[in-house]
Image (cartoon, rainbow, N blue to C red; front, side, top):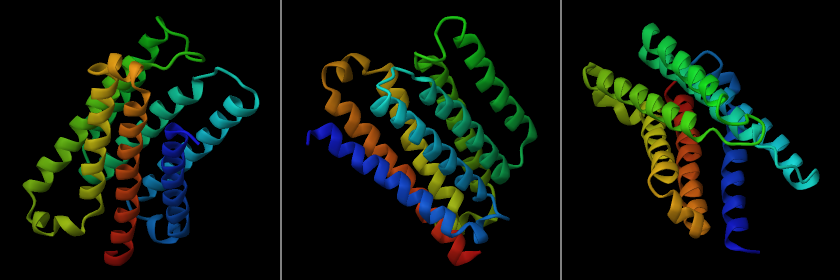
Length: 210
């Protein structure tokens, strides 16, 4: 078993564990903002199942699944941030720019067979803006003293780490990761572990604190 295969076990393992934990606690989450984390994980798992089937069984070079994960999961994150920020303009603007970036990207790349890196970059920036708006709102709120018990805080920190890593990987060290794939898979795996781990912790906090 090579290094890349090992990282895949950790990546998919953390994803499945987070998904199962979210489903088990759905009865607690269904009336909270964290219900969108369940939607996020469900979309990710379902699309990854199809992606792996076509890649390993059909030996297909389809990359549509990567593009679907990018656009659908980030729209869910926009909605989740809205649940915590309650800013209609930010939600509408975020989703509109995300969709528009994909439509423009379609003029230059094939949605089925090429990953929309530039759209991913734009969406990552928009997600980071949502995070910073949330954190600024939190700092101006008296509840900031209880930030350690807030699911949104921990998930937001993980989202920052994940999205910043995507920006760095795809736009600053692309040549390096082309030569050293182990670096790419290491960064993606560690970022994913942080993201899924934060979701588990956030759901646990919601379960404990209501």
